[in-house]
Length: 281
Image (cartoon, rainbow, N blue to C red; front, side, top):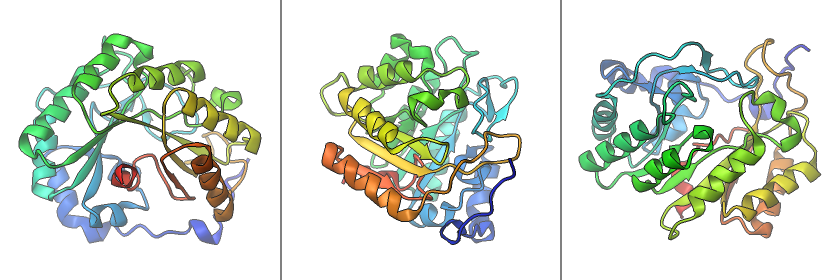
């Protein structure tokens, strides 16, 4: 299937030249951000609001998700000083809120959980007032790994379902029920850590399936939700089925709020880490 031309509401320009100073800083500290790696069209808006998303544990993923443009290759060794470099970048950039994520690292015994925790600790030691969200893989559902990230106490722990159960063929190596169990386990605390998930539309899901997914999330205690448009990275990726109109995103947001979600971002250009601080208000 050929990639469909983008409709007018999805033609948001990317002007990376506006951020030469930030790009230089990130390069100087040898760090990766989703903002830059993914050429995210929200980069200007997020930087303007003093927010960014750092990609730790390298840029190579051990899974073969058909929708994702992250490199599928043998991961590089973990860099022990990366948490300190991330903390330094956040301090220099004057960020107010930060999201930390990673590719899936099934090659590591704990899936990278300890490195997430070290990064949260390093940020908090360097800049105590910065809000922290971590967007984690499923760690194969291991409670030991989930306990490690929980004990680091970020404000939000996010794990994305990405799509409805019927379409999980696009998430090779993942499992819908396992992801729900991860969120359920993370929510089993005193409420000081909020759980969040995100999905994409345009993969061929139906309205009933999206509503059922919302119900599943509420059942496991997840009250924060992001909904965005799937954009097919190349012809080799899972074929885009439909561009969803903005008013449909508005409808889903209202449905989710009426069902009991406390914060929802739903629009074509919403991503799981987009304007992450809003979920705490």
